Image (tube, rainbow over all chains, first blue to last red; front, side):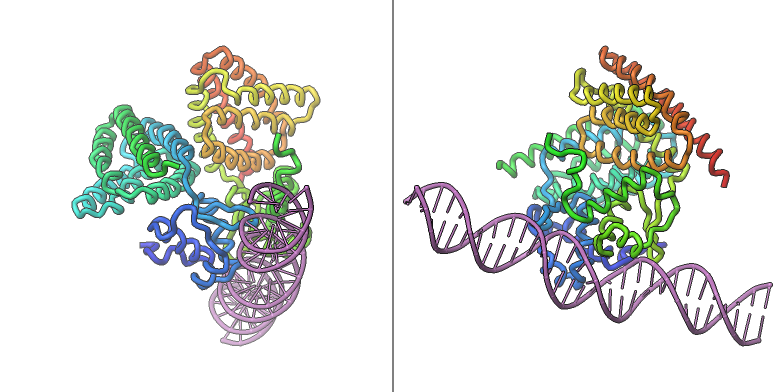
Length: 222
Length: 222
DNA sequence: AGGTTAGCGATTGTTGAACAATCAATCGAG
DNA sequence: CTCGATTGATTGTTCAACAATCGCTAACCT
């Protein structure tokens, strides 16, 4: 086992700070729109202002934070337009990756593991874990394309989407319907019917987008 | 028009430094693999080491530089695998953007302008300008998809590809064949035959990839 | 009174210097 | 000649200070 849960951030202190902030972000401890004071956060994390700025810049490139010049950094608030954009990209990339993937691609193991993990977490009523497993499933689908660039793009997109999920407050409603659908997509893919799998996935993504957009519009009437 | 050519980098000094480095990189003044000393570059650009580090980090995220811990930053050397990956992504994204684009999309004007610019530069024997115009043409194709995320991904990919072009040394051979092909793609698209345009584009990209990979393998026998 | 502007305070942007941590090359011992 | 320790240079990180900029307050003018 190369990297353990806590060992992956061992590189630099800026990386460590970024990782800690990342966890605070996906855990929802930092609400979107909130301003992050450099001095306050730096002394809370025990790093220097300069180092924290490097961490901020990393997270800004991951679109988790936004930087307004001379005003500070803020937790990103995913816009409706950005979410719609994300789903457009997901349909384009995931469906094509699935459709034109050779059979028995190594990443299919990741897909299977993610489905099983999601089912287990569902039975344990742990819905944020279900969400994590679902996202891992889609990440594995993208990995079918064997493209580092797409993998990286998808990692960014996932982070942003996760921020949006955190804005909503019914994780069961958001994640439960998709674990069975993921299993269906995986089953079709494993039989070699990649076109069918892609088709099911596309419907699935359209439904998911509608659900999230609706919940989003309901929650943020502004 | 909000931002002019020279005014876009006015934000911070780190941005300015990054922009200057970017120009040095695409101009080929900085050869791939070269190490960039923090102190040397910082005093050459007239910025502090700390500020330069922020610039380095930006360019690292754009994959123009690579950062090796405790060893420094180096000009990225695009690997053959990365180039192949880039072309795979380009085929996936550009063809689908072209195929599923509505007619008379605003970005088609950018496509037309790029074609005309390439033709003019070709007649003037300015081959690096031809290369720039060609890349602008493809960037406009991606813009047909109306996705900020894809636009950003493509900007990164373009920068990396440009670095690879700089490694080769016959810009006419690299760029001349494609200005007429771009014009053909544009013509098909404007008649509404998006499927035909996408098909031509796919052949085109396959040919371009073969050309570059061959030149690359010839030049770097290592 | 209402709107405008000048100034104030706070925060970010940038710099320089200093020290610790790490790597690579040199030099020396066996 | 090979292996190992020392040295030197570069990066990683912190601190303190100052300049630049923004938002707000309050005084000012009409």
